[in-house]
Length: 259
Image 1: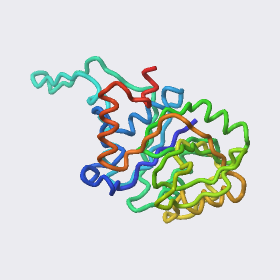
Image 2: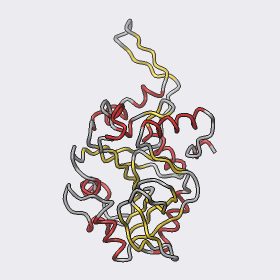
Image 3: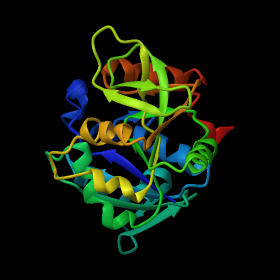
């Protein structure tokens, strides 16, 4: 099953660092946050990724192209025809497709653009700037159990994100933009989607979190998987430092691949 990662935005709320590289490439513990997310999925056996790139997309491509150099010891032998020798090579069992989905394209437009790479099959989707310890196998099992087009992971946080109205059967009744005093379930990403979701997307100006999710909810096709564990996005420099401290202290719940 393919995993789609949204990684094309400019990250204006953390612009002191994202002016130099895409926000998903900002590092936690020396590795980009998008790598941490991919390691989460990989630990559950999901090894094929489609990255929806845009802003400074060449940096993402160059990083994966040079992955062996970044993760191996290297000898540069200038005395022997400029030979490069990699030692203790470490690779991941991944297939990674980086797609330039446009500089100004909105989230729904980016997803629509990678439809040919996904094909007619169920796929996973998340944002390239948030980590969590959700059990991805249980998430997928839940999605398969209800037969709807879309499942999103919902967490209860006092943050200014899009707010969900969830019924007793975990069906999402409505999806609306936040207000300043909301304390309600929010969309944490980590979604499972059927290819029928592409029919809800139109044009590069389409914002996935607005009309498409609202229409899916109205049509009874959007379900929520309630996650009571850890989730944290990296919208600000303060949140980046928070994740750094957690990693340095050995208390990084999203590092499920070490468990």
